[in-house]
Image 1 (cartoon, rainbow, N blue to C red):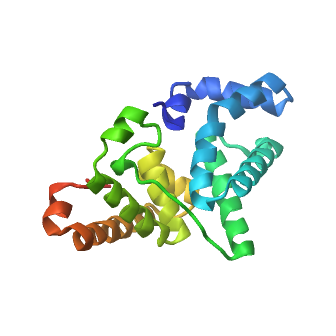
Image 2: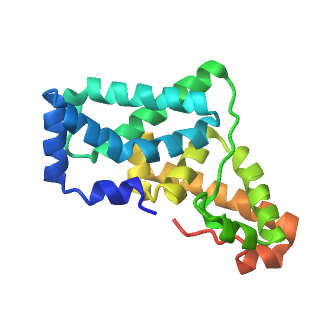
Length: 208
């Protein structure tokens, strides 16, 4: 599966800058290429933060609208994807603050992909399904910034520096979010399945 990071990084900075410049001048094809390149991964990220299809679509539309309305302020110092995800994250936070509710159903990459086919899903053990459910519950209890950091790191393949740029926080804060999330997940698995299961890698937690 190709992530938005892989797709966007397959394009050189010069090519991306040229696309952005064309879009800035009103080139509809260039605008469409930028949207097509990022829309699926943006929606996947936003949906796991917001938890609802309608809200997620609204956030994505608003993020793209704000991005293309403010192309004159875009700096080629950053990837377009980083800038777009920064805008989307702000819109998510604003909507969550207004509604004062966070209902999410998140998936943690280390426990399997949403793209697993029927054969893989059928082969999955009951223990793995139980572990997946336990991790969903644990991640659901994280703060919104912690959820965003986990999703960007594990599902969007962003490094800590890129996540810091998107969330507009220090790299140390991103690492703290990830550390706390991993600790919570590890403790929950140990409680549910025993120390040996957590230590042996029923869910492997990568270092950040």
